[in-house]
Image (cartoon, rainbow, N blue to C red):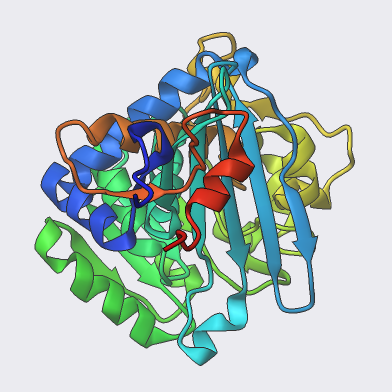
Length: 352
């Protein structure tokens, strides 16, 4: 008799192909809005979550990280890397996969790719923050760094904030041209510029999303006027920043989880006791976000495990109506839970 796994042993797995099917079936802007809604709901119950800075293994070439959290009912983690030089060999800078499990029994209930999902989640988080922090009526956004994340950022901001005018700059003009081509069917007014200084003129929101793992000043103090919202996405590990320190000193800074952001974000340039505001407190209504027309707001985004938990929770919720997944025979499930060895022996050659 062959081995026949029970339903308990079969774990839903969402491949890259199926993730793309889910996004197309849902519609990318609706997907962004609903994903942001899940993040917003989880930020409102922030205090329920286990929280720890991501567990990181750094090398000269990049970083590999684990990002775990739990709300006491479900547990989730993401494996993710960041290797900026990968593009030279035809590989992605960032790849990821994630797992969600039930706390009560430890059994996984979802395994999914998270390369595509992280791009969507990162953009949804940025736009959600901007909904609380950007000037009211913002329609024009500058994106400095037009790599793999740029189109996702643009579409999330359009879906959640209403920005439909894009000003693009990248040191590689072909990256800006690719971004503009990809976004052409989505209702944007797009201009490409030859310098960051030109690109930020007239912007309500500035998004910096570059990939190089180094201290840099992609945005300098003279480029930032009053009333701007800055969405700083690219600085996400020790030794990597995008903004000149003087910008930080002029800004009201909002972060996800300070113990992680002080290690990885733009605020690694500041004193450890420099005041920052946790974004969940703004979303929960405990602290005001933007308080004045001329205020410069900065979302120092590094990505946090609760956001990935929200993304896993959202994808899992879609699988009932969109059966875009496979089932993996992942868990040993003997007839007698105490007889794992017997299960192994019964799977071997049977006597003649």
